[in-house]
Image (cartoon, rainbow, N blue to C red; front, top):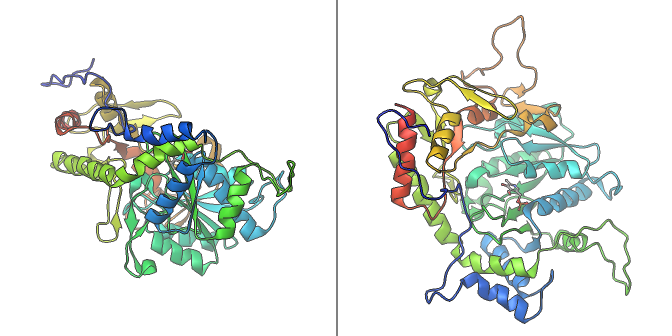
Length: 449
Ligand SMILES: Cc1ncc(COP(=O)(O)O)c(C=O)c1O
């Protein structure tokens, strides 16, 4: 085990995870609250993709987010798939099932996000064009989005995520979408419970998931509340909600036998999973409170180091604080390179890098993560378009002319790549206590000695 000079860090007894599920034991110790609803599914024999747990969970979530319809699905990725399909058919008409509803169409997508945000564009035959990230929120840069419409004026769909539970500038993005007659698929998988206000909301707080023409959330095991898996599609459009329910249950027509006129999917939520989700929903605000405490303790504990926490615009947004992250100042970065699957760094006094911090955390059994690697840097999407705040983000350097990496403002032109290079996610479990977190903070501090 590597022990930093002058320190003898004690390892945690068991792994301190990045983010784990939080079931709620009953006061009398007789099992978990969530199990009552799961048991109900057994007692009623609704061990199926229909049942009371699904109905109640859908109702509670639609009320919480402020949309008319929430459709329970097997996971957030399935919800994103059907969101792309419904948006594609609305924009371009009925699709050839063998090709997909976005066949041959470009779609503007968040770049620094999890792959599940964008892969469903490809499921439907579309081509993602990635929009660079802004330093302000670590989400889609509205200036880059405007530039993208200059380059690709024909685009009619924008897929935007709220990374790590912090809302992006979604009202600005809505304004740009409306100006260009584009629809928005909003990926609120990581940001359930987060809110935003701006000119588009009349300065009233609105939950993320209520801004898109279609939106999705996820109940994956690492999310702020979980069903162990599961997701929902959110919309105000009754026709879209009904269509998604139908597609998700194998696209059965109203006949006695299995009659099909459209391509079907088996994407509905299980009533057992929905039992867990139903039991978790009342705890959403509590989990957010706990995650907020974690973020704030890091902010205090890391003061004085050459790092910043992931940014939050407190005037316009209330995040759900799903993950706490940090960004190392440029001049405090030691030399480091990352290949496709491995990373190297040269340790240096007073400096560090994400790889060093993550390695040292793991040495004491604490789990962090690199920042989600931007999509335009992923091998699978290497040939896709990428647009930054100064226009086309591909091929910006020239062997015969200096520059190209830095913008007119002196900051990195490829913001996603820069945040990936200098940033990392810290252990963010809502059940981590202050003493455990102090130990994590000490390890991070030691990296800069
Ligand atoms: C931003 C984002 N979008 C989509 C997904 C996919 O959700 P699911 O795992 O429920 O399919 C996830 C995470 O899992 C995510 O973080």
